[in-house]
Image (cartoon, rainbow, N blue to C red):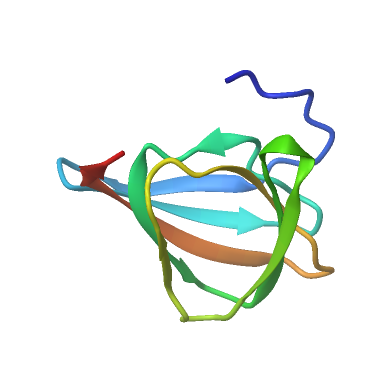
Length: 104
């Protein structure tokens, strides 16, 4: 998968743990920033550190929005392709834990 030309500021990814079992990454999103297009190779759990509004860009030009709430976790299976954009006026952050034994 080749990433299209990036026009938005990149979100900041800080890997906190990367061992045989998990990779834990904190993502910090200034307003308007994005992850860039990616596909998750492992199942993962996200725990928001702060509230935020995400724009999810999906394959085929589709989009969705999601509100995240501080401390309210969600999980996803491996294989999802998307770009996450901070669609709000304030920064938000979340911690993503990828489960290396649940490879897609």
